[in-house]
Length: 289
Image (cartoon, rainbow, N blue to C red):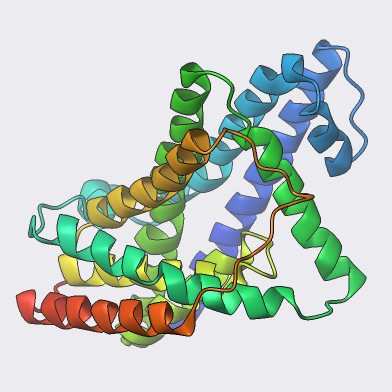
């Protein structure tokens, strides 16, 4: 059993690394074909400063995401679970009440996430970690620039729908499922997966909030027994943020962006609301994943 889990873990990591390398080669190929010189990730980010490159960069990001987060887990499932491919995916029906309860639970945690991020942002981090945060925000700012309604639609697909499907397929659909099978402890599996999920986003300030979001998505999968539910919640969460930015002007300026200090009273009230919603979720049904 241990050997099999190790084999599957190594295979999954190898598939992810292979897809990342393959997608990077494709990026270099596309750049060469377009007459663009790319020597580092910073060069790719800088291309977003010219709006004429936006379409190419977004296509590259979409391709990278499809290969890394969608094709990797599908290949993994095909290798180890070929005979029960569809059952393994757990694309099952679920209690429709969860479509309301889990998004409400997630949104009610936003003030707490913001409160935590505010204090994390005040910490003097090593230059490497600080630059990692800045690079992540620079890339996101370039992708999120929206001047027309068509930009909003593209960004919802790119930053909402694609991650909702691909990241859930990898993190909840494969990693969480495999850890549960290995250790028979769903709560440990959910939180370990949430940590891995957050690490993949390469953000220091956003690490704990991303981990909390990952945990909510993990429990959505665990309690519903369906991968469709966390996919929907993930897509809704990202799309909500994208639409909010569009309505506020469609631009994210990393030089002026600053985490707000949310009043403690609001944090306490929203956390109490989350506790009540979570209690309702726990009462609604027994976990079946």
